[in-house]
Amino acid sequence: MKHSDLVALIKDGVSGGRGGRWADLGAGEGAFTLALADLLGPEAHILAVDRDANALRTIDGRFESRVADFTRPLDLHDLDGVLMANSLHFVRDKDPVLRSVRAMLRPAGRLIIVEYGADHGNPWVPHPFTYAQREMMAARAGFKSTRLLRTIPSRWLGSMYSAVSEN
Image (tube, rainbow, N blue to C red; front, side, top):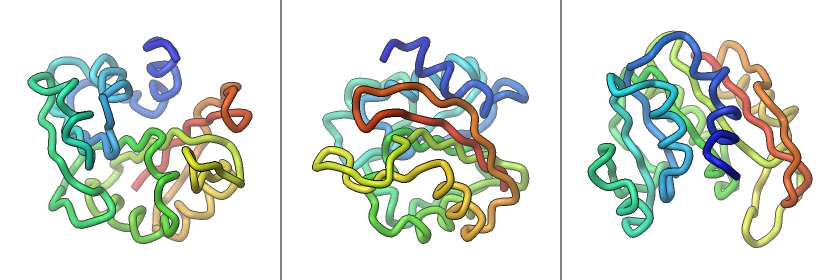
């Protein structure tokens, strides 16, 4: 995907101003971190989190980064938003992670998820979930509202979608 496609997937979930404190959980090499930075502007503080130190080196110096597993406590609080793009599908039991992410957010903070719109995965995308599943998971984790942002075709697993949930 092109950078402009990544920006388009998340922009409606980021709307509401520039700046703020955000985390990209499962940032990898930072493709979506860069898209988030374009939307939030230079006033924003973005923390990129990934288990792979080598992947984070590609964005080293542009953002604060932390080598960590987002399924474990991260000691993050009062965030304006969290982005999880193509990362939550690596987790089988998503509910504890979503409750943990919700606790990281300030009131009215946002969780943006980008995911494949499929019920069944493959070795590279082991545990994807549809938007309908996303709505139920968000409600179980205590998020107040969830809405679909965009759906795009994907040659992998048919489609991708983005959704935002508010704390």
